[in-house]
Amino acid sequence: MYLTDYRERSLKDVITKLEPGLFKKVTGLTVRDFELLVSLGVFNSALMNDAVYKFKRYEDSSLVYVGVNKHEGEDVGLYDMVLSRKDYEESFVNEPEGYE
Image 1 (cartoon, helix red, strand yellow):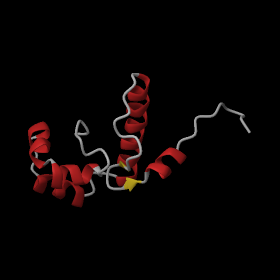
Image 2: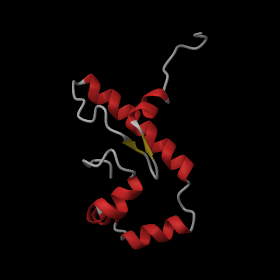
Image 3: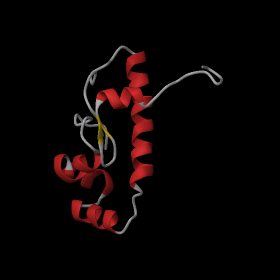
Image 4: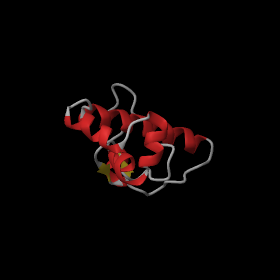
C-alpha cells in the first residue's frame, strides 16, 4: 500500500480516505472491513507504526543510495500517526556500539 504518492500521510488515511480502491484491489477488503478489523483490535498500533517506520528507513536508504530523494523535507506517515521530518530524522541514530 505504500507504493503511493501519499508517503507523508498515515497508512490508515491512505487506506480509508486517499486510496480505498487500491486497498480493495490489493487486499479484497473494503474500508468498512478494515475499520471493523481495527475496532476488533486486529492491528496493534505501536507495532504497526514501528513496522512502517522501519520500512521507510530502509526505503529511504535504498532511494538515497541510487540517487533518488523525492520526499526530502516532507513529513513521514506511519500507520496511524505522522512524524515531522525533523522528528523522523532525529529518531534514528546509527552509531557503532560503544560510541560516546
